[in-house]
Length: 204
Image 1 (cartoon, helix red, strand yellow):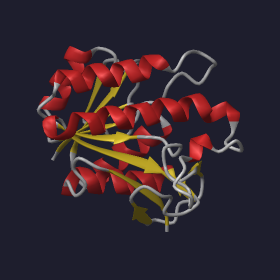
Image 2 (image 1 turned 135 degrees about the horizontal axis):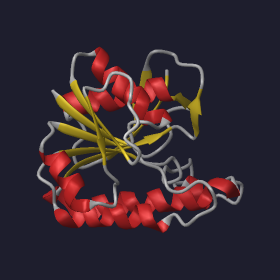
Image 3 (image 1 turned 90 degrees about the vertical axis):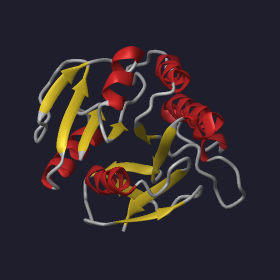
Image 4 (image 1 turned 120 degrees about the vertical axis):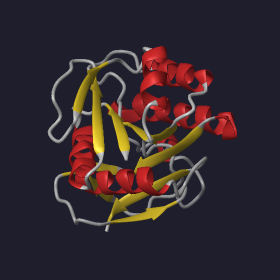
């Protein structure tokens, strides 16, 4: 398969590139810096906000995994929401597997985790941003071939179990490593098992 990873130099993206390459896929890593991702066949410079460039990359791949986070240095998170909104509006023909946040997962009372007063304040804006991104894709329906994968609430942890468990809208477990998330993301790229839905994974 031809798999493109947008955000290939990050913790999640680099794990995905390595896992996809290990399985023998042709992997294109996309970053803003052009930094080489170990295992990538090609390294491309592009920003998620460059919608025409991203659409071209998505449409040239069998599956594109997007592992991009909002600004974590205190800057605004809205730009990443706007970038996803523009991508959804552009209706790429290729298939998207998007790394979302855990904040939109539901607790035992059916309440979003991000709405719990105990949710860590440092991560609230990012969690709300990815809750918005999830709704963008849900609103697109089948006009976009998408899947969104939410990690367990404690992500990423360092210890990998080498396996994962999955759920739908409630956490499948407490913690997840980047390596185990990569297993789930590449599995989804290969199998297209959750098109048009969000699912969640945790380390087994």
